Length: 327
Image 1: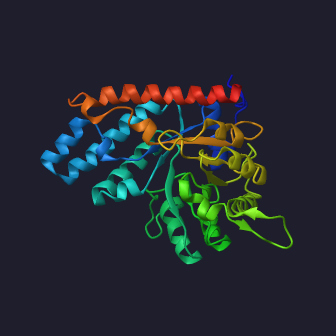
Image 2: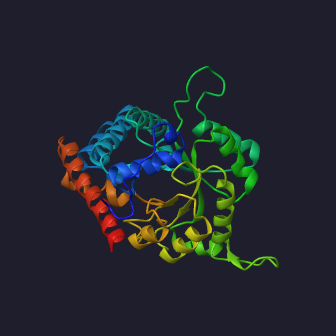
Image 3: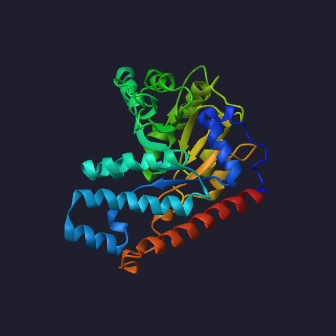
């Protein structure tokens, strides 16, 4: 058994809320890996790039993105506790990209795999409600049909405060939210590390204040695994801050980008993992999706080659995280 990941599961009834479903995946797969699905054509296999340059067809672009995502899903399904498409990497390719994203969400849901949409949405309450309906509502806002864009969780920006977060909680109380707290980029400290002075409280950084807000927003939403539906985004590039934020929001799930290409530390996953070890999750995109150079895959058998390499890297990442928890 992996240290920090108990064998105790949650029942089917109790798995309705996002936090319980994510923890159940972690325990079943003995993993804390979340796989990013971020199509960047400049990193795609050479064969795919050549076809797209030659044919310049939007339908082909959509199909190639979906095919690549299918390769990634097949390669990582035994390891991935959830998948995290980043909306911008689809939006940049116009309608073809958006159609590919829609199809990818459908593929993941058909297989019972969790989807965290990385869209970092937020606005004033009225507009936040529209964002929430788009991504989290179970039903279409007008027609009597299921919302085919619905995902299990969404990244959001808490900069507007409580009335910008509340609409997301109301639209679908069982959905998960990950609020930006301490992001992985180098310039995050320009704002997030600034000290807030409150005469009635000890000094805290902006990131720490956001963690306190997250803790409050998640109170009363805890599932049977003990975690609330409001979590945080904390970069794996800042292990010590991860430890401090975990202490301020002990019932928040933590999504930790920055593993791989951004040089994040696996120590941060351990620091934020909580007493049971299932409170923090490593999100990997570039380092996991593209463990090859485009020119290494010039032929039409690229899918088999890419799948084998991606699977190997995914298994290595899971093992590396397990070893850090054992240490």
